Image (cartoon, rainbow, N blue to C red):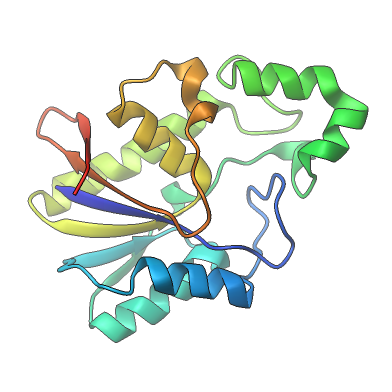
Length: 190
């Protein structure tokens, strides 16, 4: 199965830890996503996180390309708990040690009240594996968040878990992966 991963564009409430907050795209965010899909592929379907910063664009693109759209709750962003809606610069003033622990070892430190990275990983991978069971051999566009893209790309690159946050994913960025029958991801440079 071929997966084109597309991160949502810039959001109205800006950067920081957005997590489960349901921000809308800015005009720049819409433009970033439209540019990333200006030359549509021969996708069989579009799969999206249900959060508006992903789903609103996915609805538009599915309609334009006459493709089925599936909203998958399992593709939501990591829930950052008490850090939701806050910027790293703000957290550095009040919680520098905890923020440093999260950046250095996201699987070992969970933001207060947040979703453990292991649970997030399991949720995203289960969702993608379910897609594979139903749609093996197809080419899908996944409209998702930075966290999910980092996770899947890190697996394709065979990175250690503590290297997850070193994977840089920009707004409106697209990455192509292949998922094989053994459940292994491979990055395509095409």
